[in-house]
Image (cartoon, rainbow, N blue to C red; front, side):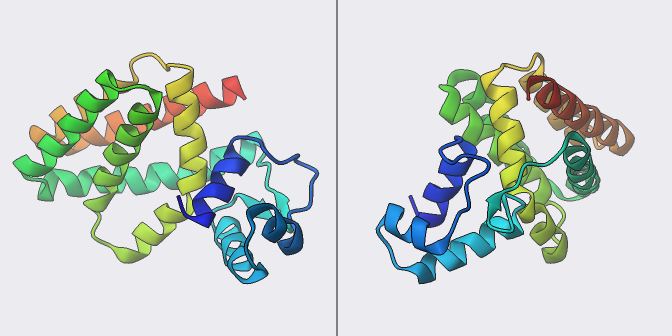
Length: 193
């Protein structure tokens, strides 16, 4: 696990107090590294909306809704592209991720869920949109962890329907399905916050 992943994981697992200032000196000492890599990690975490002004960023429900709106726009565009570009190998990869999510322990389900959504977004084939989506990774992880740990009903069945609509090449159906899927994730997570 990289330094960035360790610190990110510690933030997402509430290792730090929300009021605590995350200074380079404190983190360098805690993780046994120099301040230079800590500085780079903090920049990345700010880029991903996890840290703001040296503190863990605690988005309001409205902030989450706004961030999720951006995610929904990207993934809706992505599934439209997936209908055009995805072949049988792509669809099989999506199906395998659903299977792994069904079978696996929580950590495997989280990885499979991440793979599913990132695979959809890969259909965009636009580096600028991909960069914007990457900025949402931490927020997406937080939501994914909540829907997996709290076992949101129909989560994986919805994934299956999305794959089916891509295979049918039904653009309007798949756009509606991904929108509803993400809206349910948002509402479920906000309820459990």
